[in-house]
Length: 355
Figure 1 (cartoon, rainbow, N blue to C red):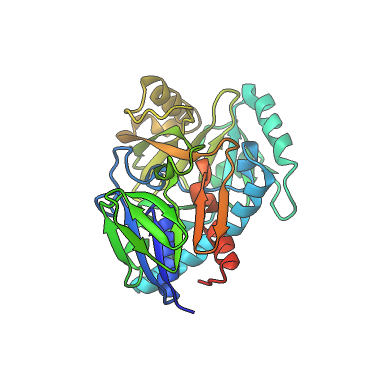
Figure 2 (cartoon, one colour):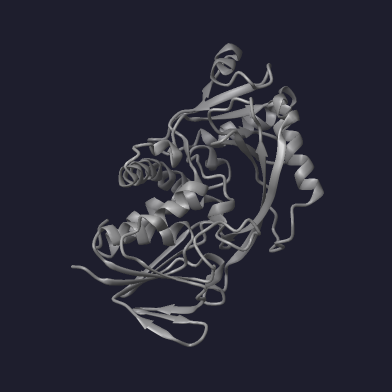
């Protein structure tokens, strides 16, 4: 049965929902306060544009529960399928501009081996189906990533990957089928079958999806924003094939390759809803950590720095609420790209919709 579907929010969840449901033949409308689908770079747009797009279900066990890891494990092949379908729609056949799956590396300096072993102990509790970290010899590490500092401790996480947010998010809008995008329209509240805008206008649908993130406040009063900061570098001549995660006693740092010789370094995790520019301390810590494992970054150029807020609930776990006429997904915290397709799959199964 084909339905009229309203979606509140055009972040990762909203765009992926619109793309999937429109290609399934449903009539879809999306409402979002942003002026348009493009990235803003000022910390006020979708957090998905700021995120690195890492798909690391096993590595995230360091800071999340097994349910997040299992959802993430399911999301990896789902993103691969989305990338292949988008590439086919473009007629180019190059899914790598949207998605890459080359595994990831966890790294530690010698003095931080104890901290790394504590992380590995937490990862050893992984549910069945998740790969185990594989310790690499020094020659094997340099064979994978020759630009890395010699002497690092390293573990390879097979099957992990990354989405390219700057390409994926606009493509989901561009290739959605006959979707009505209502940009510049803020949603005040959602109810079964109804989306009400901040000007009081109510729009009726057969089914409503509320995926507004922090925009769902005050309707979801427990939501909070968690500040994240990232740095974009232009690093010509610095080969990097897969995401790196530096294991350190005080902070988590990742280094993620991007097309066109760009590298993203992130991400701070600060209990604050401050959207001001990146702080000096965060910038120094992130760049020093990245340089400590990739010395060739010394001559990289800083392109820009971004901040944004991750939507989180008190337990930092995602929430999927389903009632007749309305589905709400929120609280994806630092796992938006990792969890989005798997949570959508669950939601569609429970509402008898299919992609």
